[in-house]
Length: 171
Image (tube, rainbow, N blue to C red; front, side, top):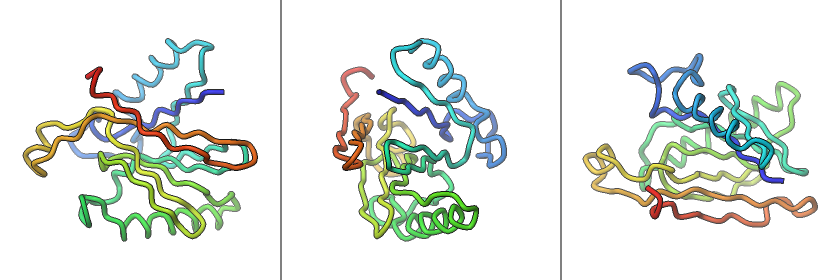
């Protein structure tokens, strides 16, 4: 079964400053419902409002969030130590609420493709669907090709493949 989870990002927000409450109230939430309507019964589309959306694929627990709460910095614009603190904080919060701990924490926001193996939870950073823009050129002298990550799971073996799909030919 193919599942597409459409999280809301910080680019199409309706306010100048990013929001925490009602973060889903932006144009990507609407786009997600357009995609859901167009998909019909072809594949499952999920458009969550949650800041951290938890999802089970076979026996693997996934946590998905946009990632804009972690400030840029570190190496290659990725705040590795800040992300590790966030990952540990999310695991502790889930445990304190009696919820299952995550096997994978998946986010975007940093516009790069990265996989960081953790002790009990791996971090996957999804690259940018839109690629480079004026902001990335002015601030980083960089413009990455648009890409997305495709994850494949097996019922007994969990995550078995992480593929990067190039989208430069359609933008």
